[in-house]
Length: 322
Image (cartoon, rainbow, N blue to C red; front, side, top):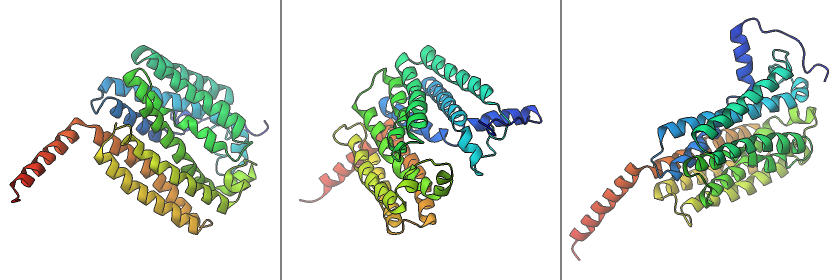
């Protein structure tokens, strides 16, 4: 496409490295790794093998980076059209598409190889399925054709907990699928809050994001619905599955109330950019703290402390006069 692969050389080696690093959209990856790690901690009952954790997170990083690089290649035309994204490595000409494709393939192969050699086949296949789903279903089929793109496409970002669980256990049970569902339902409020902020950019390049097609008020109503769905889903880990306990339950409750408050405030003022930005930022914090709660709750030391406190409480009760 004209103007999307302009020739412009990097001035030195460090700039080349920086350009390829930027192709991976590194700010997106940590959140994916946090959900992977949380899943591993729950699966391992708080006693994760450090080498297994390290390899899984490296493999997950490489898989996510591969998907993001391919996304940059596919979307180079709309990236060139938008002023906000025109300076990215491919539309600016600092990296050629064919070189970026080779880079993406190398990242993908390295990811699968790490999983296959050091972890297990299932985790590697799941990581690769995330790349395929993200590119084929979200980027190619949905992003430019349906306002529900992020809803269905959000499944790609929900796969990391499956990878983490499979890395520890070698299979999949109900618990990782609940983690999958939590992230799947969390994605629309998170991403549509961002879409509300950059609605004009999407409209400029004819990408049918929800705020562009349905308007702010309809988008905010759907954000509210998905928030109402995701919060009860977070408690399924406590009951009926029982893989997380009271500490996580309290954290999920507090975070859920705060999430509802943020969403309700936006619902009352759907055109308020500041409230959309506030919800977007909080949604990231919400998922990070929720996953942290899963990890803390799973730790053996947490169980020991709770048991000890329960023992002291029973002792005090027994000393009370009847």
